[in-house]
Length: 226
Ligand SMILES: NC(=O)c1ccc[n+]([C@@H]2O[C@H](COP(=O)([O-])OP(=O)(O)OC[C@H]3O[C@@H](n4cnc5c(N)ncnc54)[C@H](OP(=O)(O)O)[C@@H]3O)[C@@H](O)[C@H]2O)c1
Image (cartoon, rainbow, N blue to C red; front, side, top):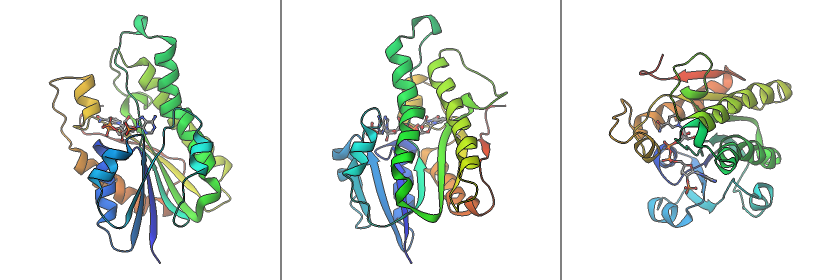
């Protein structure tokens, strides 16, 4: 039977590499979601990829209702993210709101809206950051981003507890630096030790394997950050 993988935040960076990885696997159907539908349609020509516009910063449940999912979802990767790099005293209400809406509220709302669409043993992976991992080295200017990513870690533990008697599994990967547009915009000139393709391969293998063995786990995926 074919596997159905949904990537939220699929238009570029790690998400686009995840779409490429999964669509190259046999018997796999990929649903790619993000705001930039034109970019996804240009990028993903594979027959087993269906792309839809979804903006998790507003009316998530209404937008998801309009999407025709091909079959029950076996893997959902909540990869969408928004990073604002600004000194704490300059962060505005809108900066905090957009960070939390995109990085945690929108992820919780879309997961909630997708609940009836999951297969009985689906694996949901939240993509957080080392910045949101307790005890990690922190970076100035990332308060809105890293606190919202910490909340995403917490969501993972709470969801896993609440759904532990179902087949649903949720785990969270806290990524270290990966060379993408998000990183280049936040830290110009910095060279990450990991490419988006390398990280996507790791995430994809984790998504395929770890749901059988782990639930509610927060895992650091980093070679550059204590
Ligand atoms: N790169 C790193 O060093 C690093 C480190 C730690 C964690 N991460 C996390 O890894 C994930 C992927 O990051 P990346 O580096 O690949 O970033 P990226 O290149 O900026 O990609 C972010 C993705 O999220 C989507 N997105 C943003 N806002 C959205 C919204 N409102 N609704 C739907 N989709 C939205 C974007 O698509 P549209 O613009 O088309 O909507 C894009 O596909 C993020 O969650 C990020 O926080 C990255």
